[in-house]
Length: 227
Picture: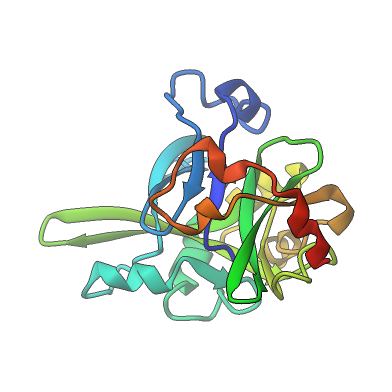
């Protein structure tokens, strides 16, 4: 799954994915949690042109009575999102890229949980495969998103059986435009090779969602013994 992630990349680095970020103010985000606003890319309505937007993390289906449902819908299984009532409309019509440069996973160590930060070995930012939706009730409009997950690769499996779908650069545009093209969409939703990821034990302060500073990424060398 994906319950927390990071985006500390500069606009210049993000422009290597899409040239959209020259006029966007970015502050490093070291502990992004559900209900936070996340930076995403989607297609402008009725066009094939990408745009950068902020979306609330935790998808709120258009038919929902209460936005609290979003807490339960931060992730969608890639294998079933096309048919699940909460996600099928978005899977058919509203794909997005959720921008990140790492995500957290935990491993139990006695009575505590040791956090690990998983990122690309080259340190570059990347995009999770996402879906977005608009919820509009009584004049309150919220645009929200979910992150698709798949079976973990060999690097993440010791921590969790699921991991977010990190899209290959060649699949970024393909995922955005796939929409109702099931075969194309599903071809994008595979786990990245484990050898491309670095898994680093980090400071347990990240366990508290209130902690948002760079200390969240401080390595903890002794925790490597867990493996």
